[in-house]
Length: 473
Image (cartoon, rainbow, N blue to C red; front, side):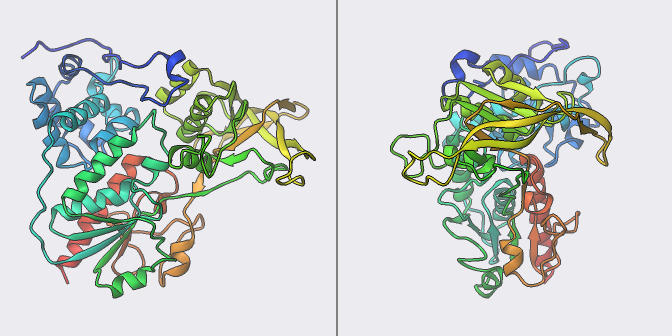
């Protein structure tokens, strides 16, 4: 076995050159080699109390899988992860490890933590490359469960239940399974072939996925129970975009980040032959500072924009996006207009436009500069507008990325389902149980927009509770 690696720094992640990748949709990070992965694994101290595992929402046995990497047993490492996670190749790419497992790593006290996420990605990719055998369908226990939504919470819940012998059917509103993993996260961060591989593995376990089914319209939750399903898990996400309600939001060239990314990622709207084309903007302003804002800004660059701005009302210290995503965006040429808040989107009517001459086009976005004031209820300092500091950014496209809310469709068509003031389904935290008997929920449908791994954790929690519920009947 190689010697322990006491370097205070992680092994860097190999990646495409920023000037090259800013113009293609290929994955930015190219992944560890076997030698780099083993060297990084040797930085792990194999702590007996496993603080890193406590930071993982799905409780992967992290020191155990890293120990397998040290031994060169990469498939063994995958099997350790697979006991806890249904989507390891996804998690290794998009989970905010820096605030979860890696935040608890002892090596992070006097240096950088072990690259846990990078090692998880390596292991999953190695398995997908060299192991073609699909898992066998578990023995049936004779029970049926329905899952609404094929995003990370729904897929995790479905996978865990299928492994226990349940016949699980996942109902997806769109024409492809994967939820936000497919429509929301760009190819350069999460290749869709990776998502499809994870879904194929679930199908091999016996999970059925029915697409183009809008639960609440095509079929209701009440009708699912009538069809013999003994429990229902709602993982329908938070796909309802928010806007600022400022003048000009109805102009052509104004998108929600949800629409912009969905049309680009899922519908390939940037192609000239697309039936739902997306405009080829030259100057783009993305309002917001989260990971979705970074995805939208970096996608706009790849679609040909010459200038892309992130407009964010707080400072770089408060920006909620992962540090890695901000760093990548800067390297690729995205410009950050911090401590700025939009107050109006400017536009004009084009009488030569035969499609809709009464609807204007974006010509700019008026912003006002801000200063940071006292902390709000979440502990972040409030932005305070500076009077008389307005300025205009010359842009022809504005993308709003200020959050999303759960769609009210399921609530409005399901008896006895309670929601909070933000539209999130109210659940028992320990079980995911809703106010309706036999109905469980998790992920963004409960919390509003959050992380993939937290949604997976909620799906895992609900799967255990559903098993307990049905077993006790």
